Length: 476
Image (cartoon, rainbow, N blue to C red; front, side, top):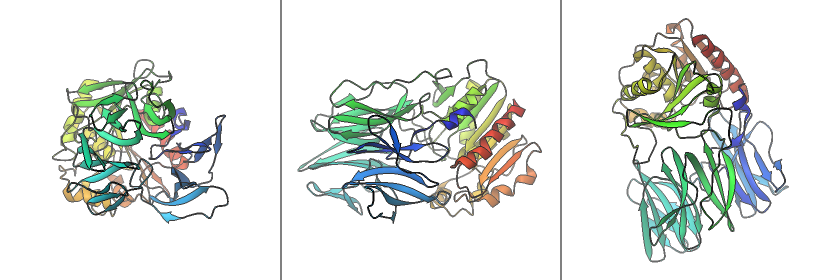
C-alpha cells in the first residue's frame, strides 16, 4: 500500500469524538478499520478492537456509546455501550440524525420541542441538519433546498441567521453560538452573538476545514483538516484569540486552489518535481464536494509524480455563495462540459480521469469526450445510467426519479480500471459486470468479495490501490 494509506486521522463521520471525565475519546479512521481510543494526558489507550467498526462516540448519563457496524456492506450499524466496564450492553438499530452529538429536542412532524422554550415550528419542507441546546434556549440548523438558516429560540424570543453554515457547535458565554461556516476553500469556526448579530472568528482564516466543535468547561475542542494535514483534534481556551490551525510541513508542495473558467473551484496538488501527467479526481454524490481536505489517494498520486486536480463541478455541495453553482440540467453532459474547462486550464502531460461512484461514471464520460485522456478509473461506479435502474437503495431510487441523464450508450475506447464490491447496495455489480466484454483490451476489472459501496476495509484497499498504481504506471 502507498504510505499515505497507512496514516490515521480522526474519523470523518460525525460525531468523531466525545468529551468524557476520563479524557477525550476519539474515533480513528484508517484502512485497517475504525476504533475508539482514549487520551489520558500521556498517551492513547485503545478502547475497542476486532473486525467491527466503532464510530460516533457519545457520552451521556455516565455511559460511552458508539455506533458499531456489524455489516459494512449493508451499511447497517447498532448502538452499543463501550463503558463503564461490566455494564449490560445496550443494543439498538441506529440512524444518527444530529451530528453535534446530542438529540435532546423531541421532533414531531414539522416542530421541535424543548422543555423550557416549548414548541418551535419549522418552515415547510425544511430539513433539520443540526441542533444545539442550552437549558433555556435551542438552536436549529435548517436546510431547504440548498439554502441554510440557523434559528435560535428562547423564552419569548426568536433570532435567525442566513448563511453557509454546515454545523452547529456549543453555546458559549454571553449567549454566543458556535457556527461552522464555509468560505471556499475551507470552513472556519465562528461565534454568533444571537441578539446583536455580531460574528467573531474562533479559528484563524486559511485553507483549513473545521468539521465539528465541542465544549468542555472553559475549553473548546475541535477537529480540522487541510490539504496537507490529516484530520486532527485540537483544544483552545474559550474567550482567547482565534485558534491558529497550523499545518505540519509534509513531503509535498502545499495544495493550491484555483477557479477554472472563473467559476469552478479546484484543489490542485503537485509532486515535488515536474509532473509526469495529470490525474483529475471527481467527487461523487453526484452532488458531492471537494474541499481543502487531506486525501490519502490524492497524496499517493502526487508522491507517484502526478499533478492531482480535484474540481467542484456543476451542482457540487459547496454552499459558499461566492462559488455556488446550479444543479446540472443533464447529468453526464453539463458536468462533462465543466470537466473539459478544468482540463484546458489545469492539465499538464498525459491525462487520466477517475472517481468514486458518480465521479467514476463522469470520468468515463469525460474520457469519451476528451482525446487527451489516456484512461479512466471507476471505483464502485457505473458506466451507463441504465446500470442504476435495478438499484434498490432508497437514495439512488430517489435520485433516479428526478435526474435527467444525457444519452450514454457509447463507452469510452480507452483503458478503464474498474473496481466494484459484489455486495454494493447502491450500484448493482451485475449491471457493471455486464459491460466487461465491451471494454478496451487493456482494461482491468477487480471484483471485491463481500464489499459494499467503497473500499471500506484494509483487505479491499490492498486489492485495489496497488493494482491501480501499477495500471497508472503503464499509462503515463
